[in-house]
Length: 216
Image 1 (tube, rainbow, N blue to C red):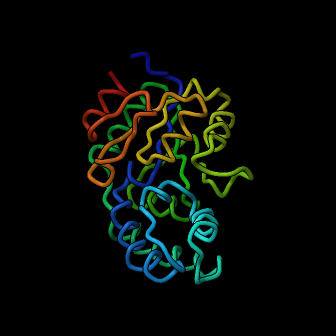
Image 2 (cartoon, rainbow, N blue to C red):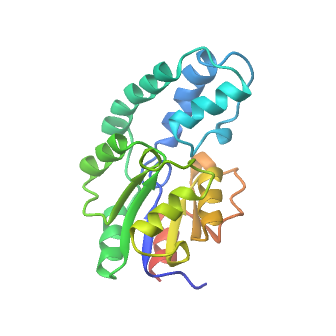
């Protein structure tokens, strides 16, 4: 397995932090219970998408009972305690980041989350310095599962997507990375144990296997 050694780009939610379980609970308790008109969406339909695009998707597919501004505000409010107090960092993440830096590889976070949410995680867990922090809010093109965010990320590092390793956990995220041409590592955990992640170049189970894949 020939893994590119120029850059490693990490998704945040569900990879660096265990936030997807909390977001799924928020979707069950409010989004799917109160903010849509009808239907029973699956978590897989929206996981990995930017929250503004989630509202657009749900409006088109199920109808929504709240404005986009109200929807975004509810997510922003939930994010403060979710990232600031509840989530935990992936085991060994700081050491893994240090090892990637020591190998002379570029290191970045590429996320559908807004910069403010990424900033909470960076500050709380001491993830800096990073060569790139890119949010879906920073680009004009559609977010995941479209490949644009990873194309932008590679370009900002002066690389092609094929020079980059991307670590993703959602179907939409894996699809975006694979379509960009990046070497795609699907990170499997409890929240995505049943998902089809076969679009990735390799699927790893947990932080130790991820570390071996990226460093060995």
